Amino acid sequence: MLFSDPPAFTSFKSDIRQLFYQRTHVSLWLGVVFFSLFSILDYTCCRDNFTRFFSYRLAFVAILLCFLNLLRLKFFKPFTPYFMSAAMLLGALVISLMSVDLGGFYSGYYVGILLMITGALSVLPLRGAQAAIAGVTLYAVYFLTVILGTDDLLATHMNYSINNSFYFLSIVGIAAVQSHDEMKMLLKELAAKKNIQRIRQKLSAHTNGLEINVQQRLAILEESTLRYADLYNTILDLIVLIDARGVIQKINQYCSVVTGNRPSDLVGRHITSLLQPTDEDAEWLEKLQNLLDEKPLVEGLQLHLRTVDGNMLEVEMSASVVEIEDEPRCFQLILRDISTNKTMERQLLESQRLIGTSRQTAIFGLARLAECRDDDTGLHLVRIRAYACLLCRELAKCKAFQETITKSFVDDILHSSVLHDIGKVGIPDAILLKPSKLTKEEFEHMKQHCIFGSDTLSTADNDGTISFLQLGREIARSHHERWDGSGYPDGLSGEAIPLSARIIAVTDVYDALTSTRVYKHAFDHETATRMIFEQSVKQFDPRIVQAFLRVEHLFKEARLKQAMNNTISF
Image (cartoon, rainbow, N blue to C red; front, side):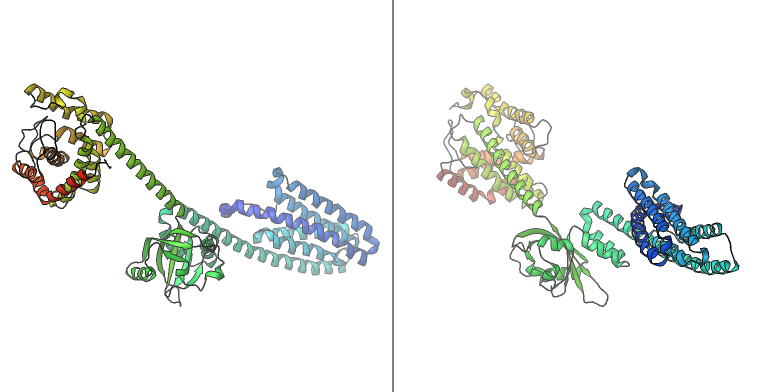
């Protein structure tokens, strides 16, 4: 058999077998063509034997065509080496029989076998030893056929046999050396391809760090121009190489595909004709170069990429300095199209905005429904939220509250502050709207609204994952607790009272003092402010009272603004 799979070639066995299969088809078709054409030589040089030689050739060509048709079937594909071996042996036998008819070793027809050896062995992927064995085998077929087919072997026959053998074996040796060299080159090429495939797989597995991986792989692939070029042109990111002036020196193939420009259209142009900032920063390139002077890699820059048809794509850029031998310093820009991601991001933000708006509307509606027996409650809720915002912003400036009062805390308290009296839905109108002072029993029943509200919100957030409802429970239950511990329903004191409840306690009392109720008239702003100050350390956290006093004028402005506006906005 002409081809086997030694252990050294295990890694590339399937590749070499596939190549052998493809080149066997080429070799067999070459045999069909040349064996048919050489009938012209038979007719010209040995016309007396033309009919017999033509029958030999016709039979051999028919066998080759039969082999070609069988090899189209999947079942026979593994037997390709056997078909090729049989074809070469039959071809050598046919030519040897012609040589016997033309005088044996005297005949120069053995050259046909040499042509077959040089042609087939140069096409087929064989090791040197395999090529040598194949050539010697064909020579043996020729030598034995002539010896056995020649009746009278004279001394001159043997002289010619030695001469023919010398040329024959020389050609076989040359073919074996050539096959050895070509096999070495083939193995190197297959190893390089496998290495590139392995690198591509690693790059695909580490998309998040693609730019860093590209830099590392480029350093490794500098040893092989072929592998470097293949990776550079097949990577699915846009790669642009610019010089220190910002002039484009090179782009990869994907950049040409995305922008619609030919490489010759982009090379030599300034990068700002291709990339534009997302804002009005015209000096972005100079700033980028300054950043690259300080660190080797700059990531996450977002720009607009202009295509040939004038469309603008949103891209994220990573940049690094590239040192090329004997060349000025260059900058490699890796661009990733994030247009789809940005569109989805904008859609998500819009959806979140709509959800947030709907949630706030639902919360406000729930709180308003709970207190719908009081005509002023809607404005009361709006004011409470405005006052809470003013007080939180002022408290956030204090060192003691900076870690607690974050943006998320402020957002949550604005949502939950309107739920502070949601428990009043469980209080009868006779108590809630009573114009005179409540009896002791009525007041004890009124206190229960804190527990009703907390329990209601606990039911709405039974897994404790919604942050503003957590604050809502704290506020609903504890906004009537007092700093000195004399409040209700739990008698908490000092910092044991949740911060959110301490904040709302001040805002709720201020609004209650400055608003008209069925049981009292409204106090003016100054009186209300003084009364809150007097309750510092008793009813209220003194630090929150101090913050209130610093912004009490803003409370007054907010109160007047709401009084001038008869509509409830949220």
